[in-house]
Length: 277
Image 1 (spheres, one colour):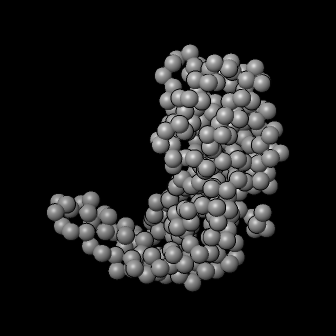
Image 2: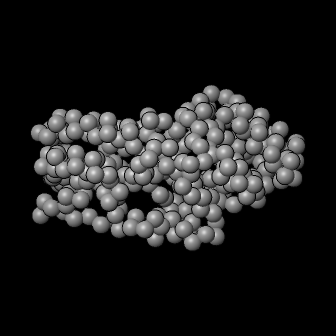
């Protein structure tokens, strides 16, 4: 594992000295770009929407800076989040062996393990396996990947609620129409949030990470700019050293995810200072 601590792309206090120093050299450009971007957006909102969108005069140079920061981010880890439902046995295996990628073969192994645990009957397992979207081209974008999100999300958010409610993830519950099978999947395991140190060398979302970091830096300068939340995946297995924590239903951190946990998150993403005024 990379010796550097993982970065929270939303928290400038986690940026290492090299990254922060590099951003500081571009502070004037970043501030001007975001100030003009906001001004142009406000002008569009109050216009009759017939005018063409003006170019931000700093856009080209801003993109070059973002691409430069991307090269720095390629050598770094970020803290990422995975929402799922798992049994205690699966969590134990995860803690020992780390994260595996989602494939039709790993799905079969997971289903068979539930038969061995007495949690699923064999006939239901066969139904789930052959009904899985992995059996079609529908899930080509999910195969051989482990998906995460760059920012913690409240467990009450509709984006993650289905992932927490049903065991097995979308590769299991997505195609199911039978109410009995759905209820059975919802009875297995407990909701979990995995906290992962994600090496960006294993992802194709390094530019998105750079955009998020630059936006966070802009906010630290007083600019009013949006958080850059993005999905990302690892296309390599992640050893147990990359697993920072498993937050389970009933844990304080699980309940307060994206509100009071992680510390300072709510303040970092909701406090906005408008330096234009």
